Every structure is written in structure tokens, then in C-alpha cells.
Length: 123
Image 1 (cartoon, rainbow, N blue to C red):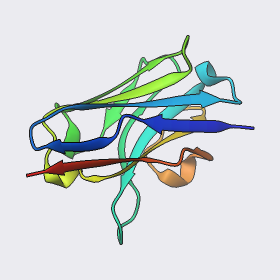
Image 2: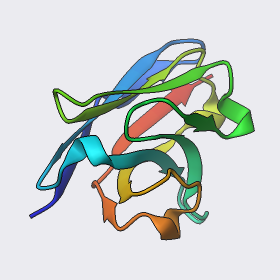
Image 3: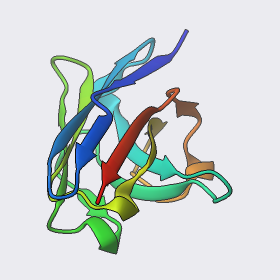
Image 4: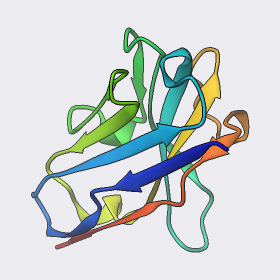
């Protein structure tokens, strides 16, 4: 059974930082591309960042470039999202997702998902 478990969300002030973690089990993590997505009520789930199986390729949505960093530790079956200088527009439920092959930016391309962790940045 594949499981993705996110953690690290919380309530912070604008300008603060958070680091999200996602621990994966039930698949060969080191061969999967990983993505972070976010969603607010009433809106579609949107792409935040992705990373290839070996960390050699990373991609970000424009609004987080320079503030967020995606990374992974294949020895720990874990992917991270370091989020700096948070603002109110970053408030959302954050999900990690896994797919075999190259990383993608569409949620439809990811078959495996976690339950999400809430991030709230108050101004």
C-alpha cells in the first residue's frame, strides 16, 4: 500500500519560514519524481514545485521562485519543501504527490497523493 504523509504545516506570520516534509512508503521512492501542490477552497489544485528522482531537475511555479526550495533525501524516502518569506497568498492546503518517470506540473499526471498539511500565513 502506497502512503504519502505530509507534515510541517502551521500558522505563521508573513515573512516567516516553514519546512514541509513528506515521507513515502510502499513504492521505490528513489525511482519516483515528486511534486508539491497546493489548494485553497473553491479553487483548483495548483502546482508549486517538482523534483526528479535524483534531484537533478527542479521546477517551480513563478510565484514561489526564489522563496521556496524543493529537495529530497532518497535514503530517508522523504521530500521537503523549504518555504521562506511566506505571505498570505501562500495560505493553502499543501499536498505531496509521486509519479514514475519525469516530473510534471499537472496534478492529473500524479497517481499517488498524501492527505495534505495546512499552511496559514497571516499578514
